[in-house]
Amino acid sequence: MKRSTAMFVTCLLLTCVSARAAVKPGTHQLALQLGAASPQSYNTIDGEYGRFGRTGPAIGAGYLYQFAPNLSFGGDLNLKALGERHIRTGHGTGEVDSSAWTLLAVARGDLMPDGDVRPYALLGLGLGGAKREIRFGDPRYDRDESSSGLAFALAGGADLDINESWLAGAELRYSYINTRASEIGASSVRTLDLLFKVGYKF
Image (cartoon, rainbow, N blue to C red; front, side, top):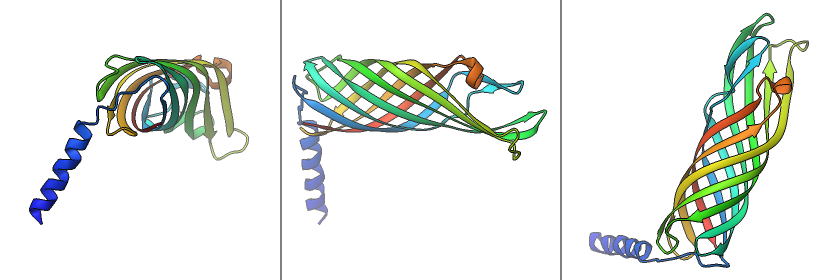
């Protein structure tokens, strides 16, 4: 039993290591991203100055079309729940829930396109938005505020080809959303995201 289990694990590892599943021009890639987003910007709420939320979960989906051996283009949707924080103002103690999103056109450059491990750099440009829900327990002061504008992202990461069809990877991304201070108390919403992904190629 132990011998057969060891043989199975060895075969599985050899299959993964020897996949050499280089992404060729014309390949499509779909990926699901899960991770965490840490806010890097600050806002003002009724005179209270603080970070725009807290570190919270991020989820996203992406599509890439391999245009050349080391260049691909596509799209990316990312949603971030930036947590809850408490504030004290003249209206009493309130709770603030913050969130953000980006919808980007992306360009990606693979540094080692023929390897099973493919480091890359990514640039994204598109639209984004941010929202905060403020609750004091009094409808006179409770409110939802949102703002949207142009957004961009810079990222670096690496993909590991598991076999010809599947991959796993990780990415560190800086996102910037241009917002209006008059609407949410912040002239921009910036986050640093750590994303883990599972992808399918066809």
